[in-house]
Image (cartoon, rainbow, N blue to C red):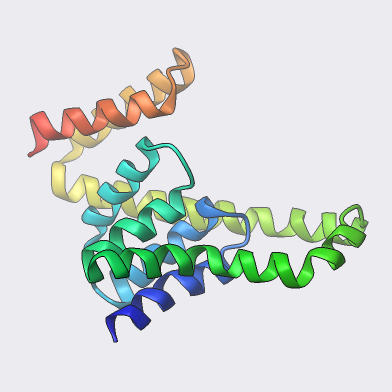
Length: 176
């Protein structure tokens, strides 16, 4: 039964998460945290941060980790397969149709309507992480990390991977 749950937890966000891994992260969070209760929001945010620090697609890394945590090696395989299966199925079935209509104004317009929805989902997730951090670590730690991250990313143009590793290190030293 656990393998079926792992499959559904990653297959459904894969179908509904139009826009790739970042668009499906809030949906995966809902499944993993709210539906199945495998993790807390804080644990999920740590998995997300770790997944962002590693190279490659975020959704498959998270699916592999969470699947392994819940069902071992087979769980990791099921999670990764469930993450890529919707794209694989759609690519095989709809490849000719998509190729034929890729420059269609209707398709471009549809994409432009979906982007704000993805932005709202990512914004809701960010607010959830901010609230969780504020409650767990306090205002000073949360604001320090927020301001430091902003300055490192926007003002000094430090690569996001270094900022994430630095935040993980800061958390390990001062928040553990």
